[in-house]
Image 1 (cartoon, rainbow, N blue to C red):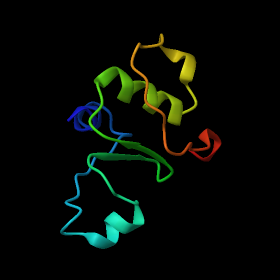
Image 2: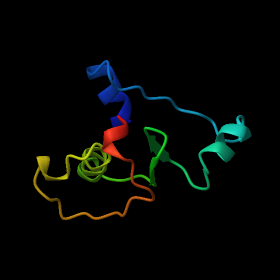
Image 3: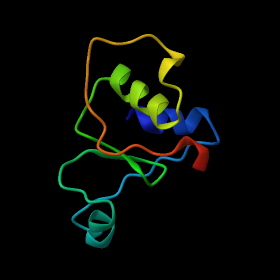
Image 4: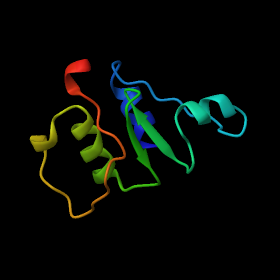
Length: 87
């Protein structure tokens, strides 16, 4: 998974995989209704298996770096936006 590759490359990134049926309290906490669900900094959520460029765009958006790379042709709307000043 791309997020685990990020975590291997950068000590500031942590990636965990949680089995929602084995940990229903975590599934409820993060409102997991579909998998995969990517949670960034407790407040930004991405649902579904997305292409790498889209995941990267969402990660940059969550960090307030939307203009850091060029636009991709793929689009997917984030569920919630995190406040970059809280990082």
